[in-house]
Each structure stands twice: as structure tokens, then as C-alpha cells.
Length: 124
Image (cartoon, rainbow, N blue to C red):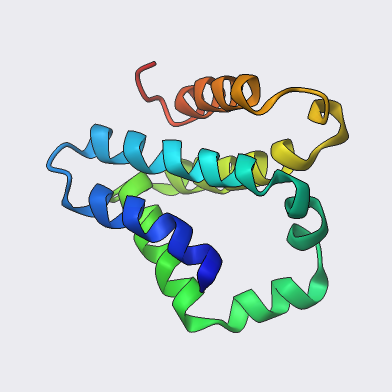
């Protein structure tokens, strides 16, 4: 819940944003910021089977994901949902991957924002 709280303000702001593209940008930027801030712990947490099982059964987490993907996707078709799943996996994996361990946070942020905007077909 503490970790979800780090994104809750951005999600709430995105949900009331009248412009869907701007809402996605606000939320996407914060998701990437939090992922980078937590990149050192991400590797050990994201593949931990106990954590995965706990999150799958944690109702507040599931509700949070529903809200988050609602902002990112709106009424997405199958392609949009697959893109979002790829995006979530890509961000989570990229911040913890050994290939980017030596890239500083600011440069990683720029690269992730550019690539995720491209994946979601958002303007840069």
C-alpha cells in the first residue's frame, strides 16, 4: 500500500484530467519516475513468486491496476491491452536489467519515456 501510494496522486490527477492524452502522459511519466526510483529493488521483487502471489490476491492492488490501465488505455481493444501488458513488462524489466545498470537515472528516464510513448502511439 505504501508503494501504491507513490502513484496514487498521479493516478487521481490523471483520472480527472479532461484530456485523455494528457492524462496518459501525466500517469506514464510518474510510473516511469517511480520505477526508476525503485530500480535497485525492482529486480528482486518483480520475479519473486511470493510477491507475485500476494499481489494477485491483494484486492487494493487489483483495483489500482484497473484504474491505472483505464487511464492508459481507455476502452482499449485487444491490441491496446497487449501493448499495455508489454509496456508494463518492459518498464519493470528495463529499469532492473543489467544492460542499463550503468545508465544514469536521467538518461534512463528520457529513453523510457521516448520508447513508451512510441509503444502507446503518444506524441513525443
